Length: 304
Image (cartoon, rainbow, N blue to C red; front, top):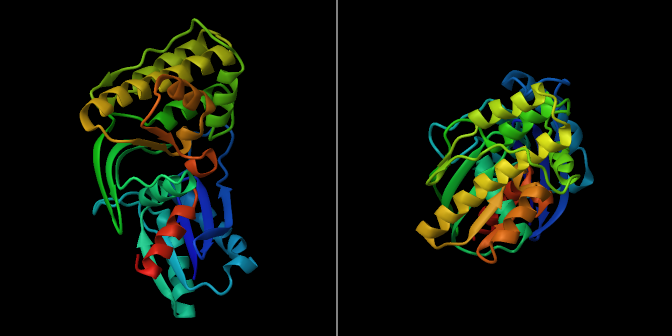
């Protein structure tokens, strides 16, 4: 059996094909953001997805598929909606209807979780997921079996970790998304006395004040490496405090995923301080991709 997965998130067009339980095609294209800009309007992102998808689907791996699975909204909630997902939904439906094959629907968040679980053979049926990306910073209670049950139990009160890092990165002159550049700059020095204090309240946290302080450091002329170090250390200490509080309350394994989870600085910091129960998605599958979506379609087609 061969299933095509499509995900059209805020900043990445993603296509994947799973055949007999294995990924045989995985291609992603970052949407273009003008230098100095901190993001894209939904209309511009939708336009880029529509242009990207036909070229990405023009591959032999996509031929002879038995089903399509597409993410149609950010989260598995009734009020969850973003126009960008209409690009993938419409093209997925066109492929399914013209080929008389099954189409399955899922969400961006479920796709993230499935991809993260698959890439590290994370087989727990009940766990906590930290979904940390440019648009989302949520702590989730998850049950994963034939279907997903997901309940938000914590997260940011204002901006996401990804927004915090990206906004400082753009202000430093890096391209958007700037997480990789900030991460590399932070790793280039062993320590710095410059600090941005973290603020955590049980399973919730704030970052807008931290962003303001980071921007002040830029105005004061601190070098890029020190500012990047203070940003990544703040993000890491925020996650550390959240993990301590989460493990106290839930006594469950924790899976960390999303684009922020691909940070080497964050991963090194956390794994030095927690000896068990903390799992990071493989960096390749931490950021936006369609492999989890394709796997969800594959499981649906098999009736697992």
